[in-house]
Structures are given as structure tokens and as C-alpha cells.
Image 1 (tube, rainbow, N blue to C red):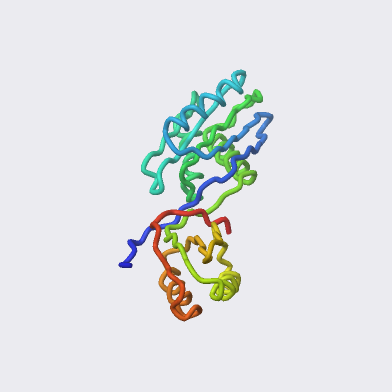
Image 2: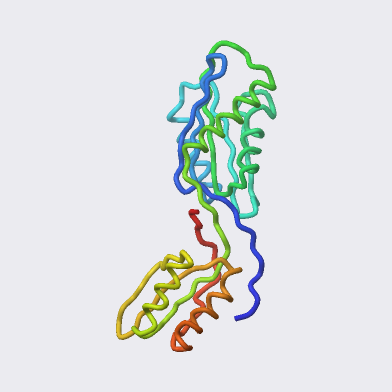
Length: 215
């Protein structure tokens, strides 16, 4: 089936969330959401600005692409480099991709200074991430495994032992499993299926793709 090109894993937000931090009576509300395009990120940022229209600032940052090909951030009126950039650095530091965050600030009457703002905006993003559900996108291979009913029990036992959860199982005159595996496990998987069924099972590569590893 040929050598698979090495692709690095990356983290994504599966379910967005919101966290809050209070610093010297200023409220910092971080809202985080998964996005796939710059347009989605822009719409999300605009949505938050409308929702929190009475706030002093709605600072933002987002990362698009599995290699962080596109990044943007905005201080939204805060002193330069005190809000958007620190927020972006948290996202990048966590290895997250295809994600946007807006931190809304309700001013509490006390100036925080440059260092205080950086800590507050960074801390708010971290609080927001605690409320999110994340997963890892790994590069792998999706297979169709076609076998007779005699080999099906052995395959099911093997999948259970290896904690491989089939995406689909179809029962006709034969049994067909659809499974996706990290590329480093693919060769061994094919060998094991062949050995377990005495060569009666057919293993077909469907596609090379990224898939979500929730572990």
C-alpha cells in the first residue's frame, strides 16, 4: 500500500466553552468556539461584540489550519500587545488549531498596567479552555475489512483487545467493518487481520485522512 507520509497530530476544540476571571473588579469573560475558516472566525467575533455590546473591550484571537497557517489577533482598544497577542500565544502554546476566542472585558475602574493586562487576558483564555472539550486530530488510514461470519468473531475480539472501535459494521452475506487507525498502527493491523482469519478477510484501504482521537 506504499509508505504513508508523516503528518503531525494537532489539537482541536470539539465543544466550545466559557470561562471568567476577575482582576481588580474588572471582569474578563472568555468565550471559545471551534472554527474552520477565517469567515467563521470573523462571524463569531462579530456575534460576541453584539452580545456584549456594553463591554469596554472585546479582544480576539484565532488559529486556522492544521499547521496554524492563518493566525489573527486584536487588542480592540487595549494597549498594543497586551490582549490579542497573549491570547493567541495561549492557543498556540496549547497546540490548538481551528479555534477562536473572544475575551470580553467589563472595566472595574482600576488600571491594571501592561503586565496585569497580559496576565488577565491570558488567564481568561486558560479558564475558558477548562470549560471546553478537546480532542487530538491524528493522521491515519481508513480501512474496510470484509470477512465471512466465521472470521467475524475473531476480528471483533481483536478489535476489542486493541481498543479499536469500528465506525461502521454492515451485515450481509458477509460482515464488513470500517475502521480508522493511526498510520503507525496500520501495517501491524493488516498483518493481524490476515493471520487471524487465515487470509480469508479482505482489507481494503479507503482513504488517508485526519480523524479525531478523543482519548
